Length: 281
Image (cartoon, rainbow, N blue to C red; front, side):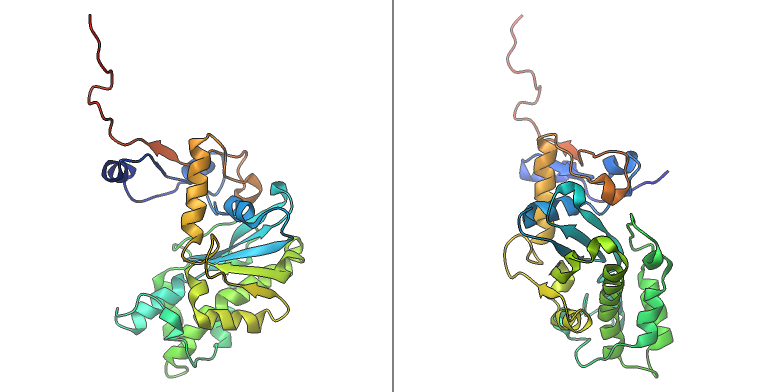
């Protein structure tokens, strides 16, 4: 049976904010037979707008996932394609002895050239080759894998910048492969909206233009799809739907048997301690 682990205490957040908290977003979908992720495709579709034409939202978080948007909700396609920034972040910590937590502003990758063998190694990863529905985590693409790639493809064969650039290019190469393989994405792949933390990296933006020259590529500076706003906006929409008893999972995305209302609700402490009010016998 599948399981999912969400860290943090909703009770603590409710206590400190005095607000109701929706948490543990994935469990209901897992119980319904789904993967529990990705859960952002419905917000992607909602914020995109059904009349905005076809497009693909690409989220470069720790993992990279895509969502085909436009048209009806039933036509949404979404799944994890492979690693996003997790390997790049792990390598940044390794290469800087912990001084960097990511390739901030493309500092490490600037001037680097992608190493074909390293990119090909990630393209050949079993998860990348698996058909959707699919979702992955750091158990598939860990810091240990980043160190292995460094040992195999780094000095004396290549520079730090080359390895860092390769770990930006590889997710894009995997994305390109996914767009080419999936007939559902053929038209939607002509318009790509990049979001998530990785979309802030100027080196990744330039590499995306090189690898996908025929696509219209956008990165929003503000609004719900801006890299810093994307995930909070998605979680806020899901939480609002949960408070209204509305489902937010998409069975065609996660492989679940049915849509699910996502998350558990934790109320803040009551104003009255007994919870019964005044009562006279």
